[in-house]
Image (cartoon, rainbow, N blue to C red; front, top):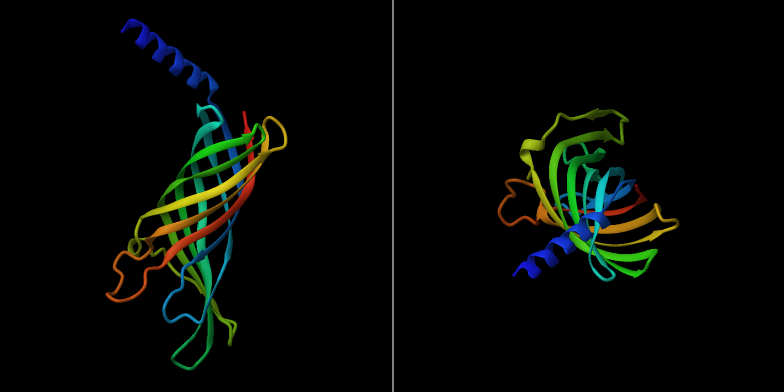
Amino acid sequence: MKKLFLGAAIAMGSLTFAQQFGVKAGMNVSSLSKQQGLDDSKSKIGLNAGVFMNAPIAENFSIQPEVLYSQYGAKVNWTNPIGGDKMSASQNLDYITVPVMFQYNAIPSFYLEAGPEFGFLVSATNKIKNETTGASSTGSNYKDDLNTFNFGVGLGAGYYFTKNVGLNARYVAGFTDTAKNRPSGSDAVKNNVFQVGLNFKF
């Protein structure tokens, strides 16, 4: 029994020693799944930035939890039923996200990753523009009308050019309806985002 506890202590000590911390930042290309009544939905450019910890859990495998500020949303176009003016809006959904990526290190400098992402909505605003007249306005924060929790699954890959500096690309598919009270019979609207950025390990 003593040998078992000693072995566990050594293993935990090795894991703690092997942990690496870092920062990352990059670009989001986000969209929302098709929304009823809208003629066209386009991607929106945003940013992501935060910190991560990487720890090995087996040979060639590691786990990387992260905490990020991440800008989601979409650009949408529609026709105003009153007057027929062409309208557009930029939906800005800002989250604190917590991805937990399980990574397979195919070679020391290249890895594949997959895992869940948990998101917490901090702000939701719309910038609306009348494309016909040119008038525009920014709405108030409507966070209370949306689900404050978002769940997604991410798939990605990364490459380290040096021991400390690397490039990461990831796609996160959302599974949670963004609306808090979706009308019965209407389709759920979910977040989707492609991310690319730089990692820096200390």
